Image 1 (cartoon, rainbow, N blue to C red):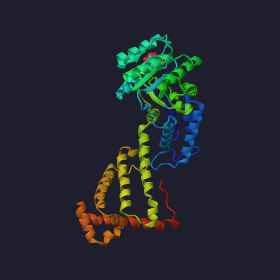
Image 2: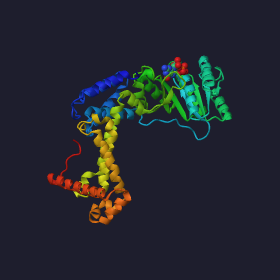
Image 3: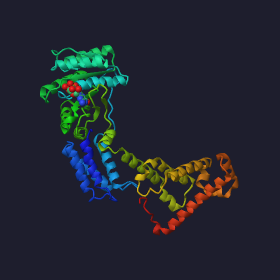
Image 4: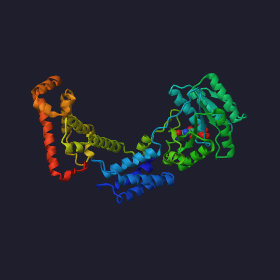
Length: 445
Ligand code: GDP
């Protein structure tokens, strides 16, 4: 299982919060220690871990608990959000130039999967409807050139420009680019030589190639198994030759996660694509949110917290408290509030997870949903004025008749709706009386 150790390390953090009511400075100490240990064992670089722990701690203590969400669930959500942020937030798309061809230059150390990635990338772009051409620039390994020709031409079905091993990479780049222009392809991908280690000759060659190609993307291919070393490499290559991002390979192996989590934060450059196997199809965009989801392995909890937050935000937006103060609760508010309750219906799948919500049966939720539909149909045919001033309807049988007629409901149903809103207002007035000095109860439980 990918990142298995990291996942189980984090799990012990959540478990320490079971039975807690809130998140405090004190009760997150132990869980944060677990998270820290899990990240370090996953080979995330120390400065990154430190900052991460600080950010998560600040948020855990500084954020009010979302109503209905347990402290351990909320911590999972905070960690997830921070992991996504750490990995760059949004997916980082490949950039193409306005004029043909767009050029992608690939660099990387030997054995990281660069040649394989070249062909994979060509297939990936082909599937996006772009015509491609490969340039074989790994002049120090004749086998790499053969490999690229075979993968490119026979397996993936794109032309490969090769000029043997006696020509300088920059010259191969120049010839290859001319060929690509002739062929009028959309994208050119150039594979370059990898060394066992970074050396000045390698960097010099890359700089020369880059000058010739003027690429829209310079992508460093790094091996996920090397952990935080991958992040250091990305930094070095960026400083030396200027790159636009990284491709992380071998994410299917038992990599511990350090590379995926460190590259963006350490180097400032995003991971754009990931290799997840030896097949040509195994290359895909790097989605920080999905990656965080895989690491945490808690999709259910995350979507539950997300939903609970939505419901709460909606209620907040209604600014009900202000309405209560001014006793101006009208049909618009009525509708919004009832919709919020009905929205809980979509949560019925996870309803058992909400403390204190066990009492709400699925039947009750269905009832609430049906109620919204009924009310909506009547409120819809009201004039804006009628919605804001229910009095108008209480005073005028003609208006009530019109609403019944236009909504296809009975006059009795219309009267019931009007009675309901006045009951609501009365209840709120009473509530106001209970409260001293106009202070309001908080929305959380
Ligand atoms: P290069 O020296 O950087 O050009 O590396 P190669 O492309 O020759 O790849 C080295 C080895 O890694 C080959 O055996 C590839 O099949 C393997 N490889 C490349 N990418 C992946 C990947 O995403 N997952 C796995 N499991 N193996 C990979």
